[in-house]
Length: 217
Image (cartoon, rainbow, N blue to C red; front, side, top):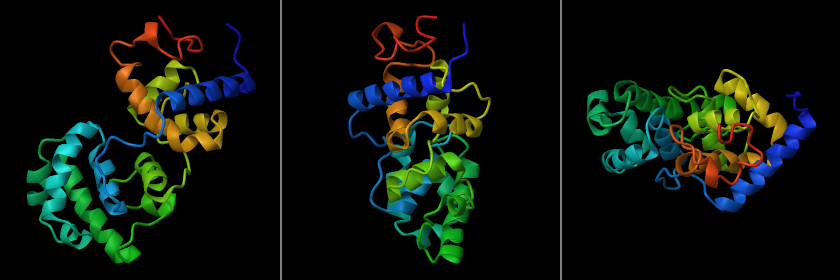
């Protein structure tokens, strides 16, 4: 099979973006969030290697107990652990949530920073989380958040063959038009849950099967 040119890959990526946007118009995230950027930071931090549904069960209790960033900053880690015990890696996530609250207060005047660099300084916040916060909270698409769904689907589509999320993101930024960056992560998450399912992809009813090199394999 001849190697696909960058031009051809860009054309295919644009079709992917257009079809997913038509299928999932206006979708952002399944995390239940309010208008507080810090609540979003913590919700996305908690969602690592855990389902959004699981996070949505614990965050209402967390915010009822610690409604302000100052409340969480002064919390005892054992108390936060007890609230989020049902999600994966709750020990580390509880500690990072408290540390992040303290850093936002100490170094950013209590306001969530609005740059990728500063966001990634917060404990537990990597590039994926920073991308989502910049996009959802501040309306700035600085990149494409590569979670397990995006990584898996874009590799099936042969839009990247990189072995890490960060390298995959760099490949995707080259082929997807910038105006699609803000939506593509959210749309692929839904697509990965209802069609391109990890263990049983529904290729026969997939809206991308005619441009997917892995379809029906």
